[in-house]
Image 1 (cartoon, one colour):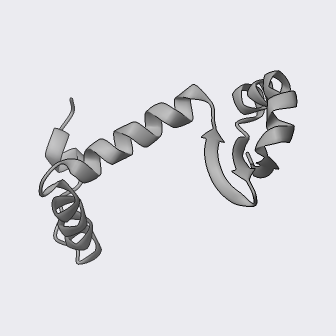
Image 2: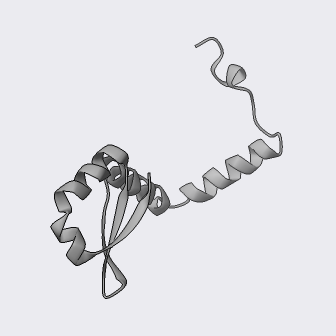
Image 3: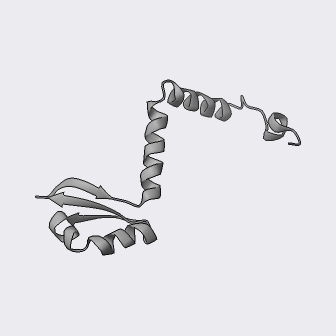
Length: 88
């Protein structure tokens, strides 16, 4: 998986091949115009993952809760999987 930077004029000519690379190799492409990033091509799974991550960050308090739980684990303030779920 790699991120490749390509001028938009070149990307237009190679769009089908680049789409295949994004799908099969998980490559990502940043298309530039006059040297500045303009748009991105990525496979659909990466797109869905990105939206899911954004949803997590937009959920009020969720990031703080995740950080607090991580700190609890690092401080030894957690219970084992076996204690939490038993023989389930």
